[in-house]
Image 1: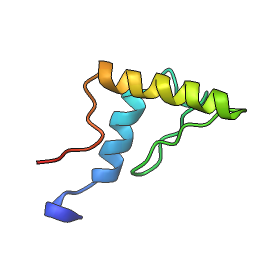
Image 2: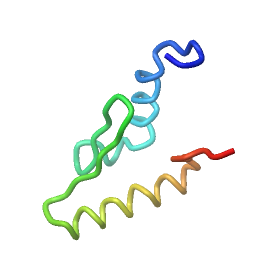
Image 3: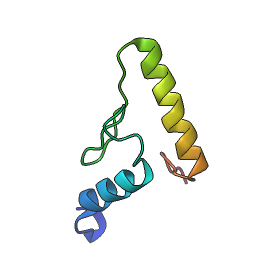
Length: 67
């Protein structure tokens, strides 16, 4: 692991499960370092992605850090 981090993937997954608790299994899955959004149709996917991104903003979850 970079910077000597132990269990970084597990910690990420636990945090994402806690943040997206109401969405996981319905239209969002959390994997080791990723959280894919899905739906039955393309429009459903876009709507679900919008919900996830709005929730990220509301919880101050930063998806990309640039210095």
